[in-house]
Amino acid sequence: MHRGITSELYGGGPELRLKQEMLLGIGGWRLLRALGLAPEICHLNEGHAAFAVLERARAFMEDTGQPFEAALAVTRAGNLFTTHTAVAAGFDRFPPALIEQYLGGYAEKKLGIALHDLLALGRQNPFDSSEPFNMAYLAIRGSGAANGVSRLHGEVSRRLFLPLFPRWPEDEIPIGYVTNGVHMPTWDSAPADHLWTETCKKDRWLGTTTNLEQDIYKVSDARLWQFRTDASKSLVAYARARLSRDLTAAGAPPQDVEAAKHLFDPNALTLGFARRFATYKRPNLLLHDPQRLLRILTNSQRPVQLVMAGKAHPADQAGQDLIREWMHFIRQPETRPHAIFLSDYDMLLTEHLVQGVDVWINTPRRPWEASGTSGMKVLVNGGLNLSELDGWWAEAYTPEVGWALGDGREHGDDPSWDAAEAEALYDLLEGQVIPEFYARDAHGIPAAWVARMRKSMASLTPRFSADRTVREYTEQHYLPGAETFHRRAAGKGAAGRQIVDSQQAMEKDWPALRIGAMKVEAGGERHAFELEVYLHDLDPNAVRVELYADGIDGDGPFRQDMERIGHLAGTPGIYVYRAQAPAIRLPADYTARVTPHYAGVAVPLEDGRILWQR
Ligand SMILES: *Cc1c(COP(=O)(O)O)cnc(C)c1O
Picture (cartoon, helix red, strand yellow):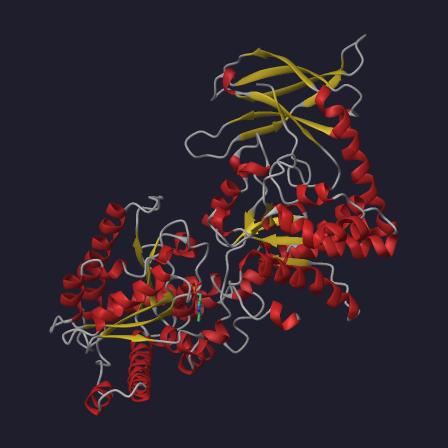
């Protein structure tokens, strides 16, 4: 029965999917417990595992006797949610009836909450009974922090989760970012490992990687270029062997098998291109004008060869069609010597590609590539990137380290924009990439190319190494998360109980809160503001009153705490606040707002209330 549940990934419909996610999240946490493991941090990789949030809280209830809400307030501090998708459609959603069928009993008997309250954790509007249950919403409501996987993806994610934090400015949506990195020792070739060991020593990917940059600058042009040409030779040898093997296995005519053994030129520029053939990756952008691509590949003075690999999901007809388009192009007799498509795209094949190509091409449709990692794998091997300004490349790219496609803005799936980017891609190849590769000095070395390689290796390899990613997760999330979790868990979750009590008081008094009119004294350098706020029965220490103004010209917004200077005599519950702010803005640009304030609780992540003056 369990094998049935795990038999098929991304198939079988929502019911199978729900069972899989229950097994992963609830079963996963139970397994840890059965093994006697009690991790402080549970890192949720996308919403698929979000049921772990529930089971972790349930286990805490069992251990301490706390009710569900308090248990969740404690345990969420130790959960970190990393979102990976750049489109709302990428979130797993389940029909409410399915949640009721499979988790109704669990909610009532195990968590001690009503089905409605469980559903509310996965809904934008808890009172909309038709709204599906969103796993990403559950994940964010059950975590102490959330992040995207690149700087740009952090921005995109703040936009995607905006509906969960009504009336909050987009840049305060509590989702940060930790840019992905790749495990360099997995992706470097033996010669690359040798080169890096020689220049930067054996433990280079451990600890701090600050010296790498200086060390790699010391490598000579001749050494770097030799390293690169050796890598090209290895890739060509691999491509020949692999293609002739594939052709033999497919029963191809002997002359085709023989031809495959002489395919490619080890001295020609090699472009690499491997991906899942999902439409957002635009794997056919390079094929926009097949004749122009053919001219680029077959230029007798400056030949170019293309190695491709990929696969599409069996149910993805559009992806399958894109592969067929490429196969059709490659089977033409003129193209055949210059381009190959290797099937069975897997890590082993990727390893050969990223170790051997001169340029790695990636053409996703911005902003749909949350991070992208394949381009990072070429860095350690001296390969260069030519990519859309999306995902990691949007923060990595500078003109010295590679080439960029796009204008750094979003254009949806506008076909005319795709066409313009395809033209720009050909222009880049013809006008910059190919000439630079073939511009050789007296020693046969392309000096500008080697300088670019060195810069890319030196400055990007350490930044996009998993070492840096893991360090950021540890410092920004795992350590502080574990500390908060311990603090809340102490005394059988006393702090968690207190958070719930404070939130209930807030819930009761919040609707009565009023912000009075603001008195302004405009000044030459600073304006002075004074404000009355009616807090009803709320403890004034339980709220934060701030002066706010939108950012100017892309700068962040202005935010400043207003100081409570007393309360209005004779009228209980009314407090007076003051603040000063720079006169670079008009007084009317400033507005006041009130938000909840609890010691050690993340606002707005754990309480999204906000009241604006206007
Ligand atoms: C690295 C890798 C990927 C991911 O590549 P992205 O650029 O992140 O999409 C996919 N499949 C294989 C086999 C890989 O090695």
